[in-house]
Length: 375
Ligand SMILES: *Cc1c(COP(=O)(O)O)cnc(C)c1O
Picture 1 (cartoon, rainbow, N blue to C red):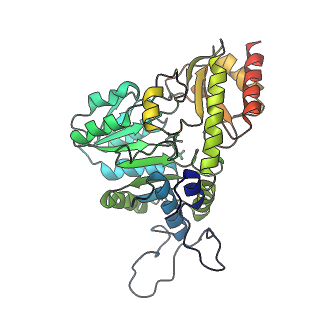
Picture 2: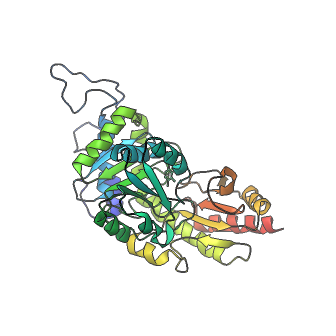
């Protein structure tokens, strides 16, 4: 247990082992393909694909953030997609039906193809308006992504969970955008909280990682078994870097969410910006539901510039914001999402991730770049 009740305190102490004289506070990464194992091959540490002490510390830390004070199980993975696939492919079998969002992460259509190839029926509906409710009947699993990436729509997670459970379906929430400091899916009733920890959770844009947290030990065992079978395991170095990064999660989130809010407010005053979305804005269509289930609204803002060329001029003119994909890092980044294809967004659609720069510098850079792009 981390001790203390504040979330900043929890973040800096999450997953730390009890103090041992002359040992470091956070033990370093354990690089081991196998462990000394005389006699009967029982756990905890036998072979490096099954378990690793560095994962154990990180998994405890994430569990303390996902469900403070509760006994939960967390399984870490080599990437967010590995975590997502682990839930879907360990919980579903041929003949089952699954409901996915149709406006979620851009790799979900590939996942869909793979699920269908295994004889699983895939239904999709938009995140906004709780539209997934309409296609729930008979489904085995409901997959929610709220806020959705990149459109930033929000659904009423408690409402969808209630309906799904009444219909006999499990619920998983992709919580990447919010992080556990912004939203706790298990508290909202979900069976699985899943995330790409490549983004805000680790926040430095230097590692890929993912995790699944759930309360039910049997379901966790299924997810863990999948990791063993597929071998989508995190490297000890990545796991250790992630744990180290969690110590600043609250600090980073505080600054980045405040910067996102300031940017959203500044963008709201511009005639060249349309389709502005940020769940923290009181005028955003998602704000009411978001405020009922989120404690922070995330670091991502999205908006639309008049056309592709205008958007490209804007990205070129930015000095403090990298033209790069991904989000949630301490250095601000932005991209024209349409360059990838796949997302149903206008050509001038920009996804901007607020970093930890000083608010005044960041807002000034974005406004200056907009002025230059408008010329
Ligand atoms: C990035 C992302 C993923 C995939 O995570 P990786 O770590 O890149 O595998 C999944 N879901 C959402 C919402 C994401 O933003």
